[in-house]
Image 1 (cartoon, rainbow over the protein chains, first blue to last red):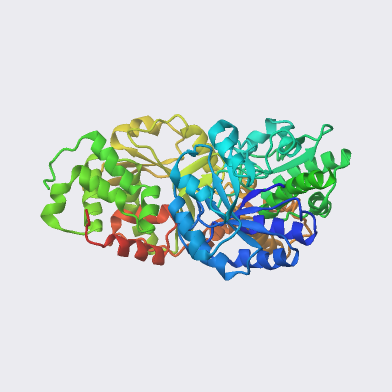
Image 2: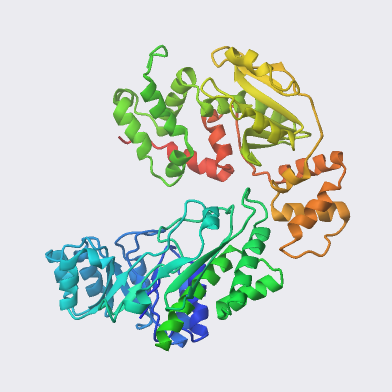
Length: 312
Length: 289
């Protein structure tokens, strides 16, 4: 199972909504959403579509970032207000076992995921009391190879154990991607269960893990596309605009980046629902907005992973 | 607090942080700890003697900086208060702080019947980039002024004689004085303008001037409109540019009298009346250190 970790912003939710509507990820992908807005409108729209499409998604109830970060009750109350089974509870662990245990008890929660860094002390009572709760069924650990004791302990619990990697190498400026050719992005989908003995793997798709509120007009437009190479490794290409000396004419920059992306995909016979949407915008000389550009990149990546997992 | 007291440079630099964008953004969110820190570090006596509000303390810090640490904020703010606000009162004007033109950013620009760019060079600034900055400003502005300290007039007079020079001496009663007027030009570079306009603005200008927008796609609209805009006679294009920049007006409430210490921040953060009121209502809280 692939667990993409996404901020619950508009275009991230649209991406998953479309994939669920197209019946493209059920059974192989379970997204994890970190809410960053106080309002729930986008989560509400997604909920109905997920429920109809029998897709579940984790919702982090104590996000690290956004408008209401930290150990609170805002998202817990939201989760409780929904029918169970579609949004599943997830918690970020930061030596806050007491808070999480209280939330699980007060909210009567089941099937909870604990997301943590690899610096957790597997001997700490705060952590073990939480980890051994019946209601906690999954662990998502960043770079777990660096804490053998934790890994041994979690394996002994016989619960779902997921590794989180951050393979996207963000550049200081978008235009820096111009000089980067294609390169290996990820092999987790090949080895997470067969060689590494995990039940699933997580990443931030082709987005940077760092959270930036809002965003300004970019000097360069980049379309990040992943695809399967011969050995089924996932590679990435960054299709970057060329005229990056000012913030003017973002539409023209998109045209430059899209031309490179579309020619590459067509020459290599790459196609899926996300790429088809890109082809349509390009053929109609239509600039769809930066949110949609991001959506296409994310959607393509999830389709690449889902296609591999459902085909093996 | 005696006005003759001398402050050490580190303390002045530390004070000057209070007039930065990031500090003000924190205050707008109700977080006044950056001010509390300065009071604890330097001014506990001031606090215990007076029991005043945050705004009183900021006014005190500003007055110290004004006398002893004339950084760019103080200079810009003084120039706004002493010069531009007066001029604004006389006409329907629009002001911008940090206005980008190509690779350069003009410190202050003003649009009324004409367009003017002001570049501030303090004692601490070098003139290394000045030539290339002026080259950019010439492409779109009718008049360009340099604002320089009295001690540097000679040095800057050697630049292009069409550039106006305003000298400042913050300690004299008439702090800003015109040394040389700017020569007015109306040459305007369509390419440079295209990088200033928003998409809707350049489309509106084409529609307004030619009666309609030709058929364009989102991929070629920039190039098509640029070609058409380049054909508009310079005089008219200049006027269209000025009108467009004035129509971005933000309804700022700059005032030479009330909260004059904060005018430059209001402008830099594009605060409207409501934001400004909100900021001052937060800062009117009694000190709570």
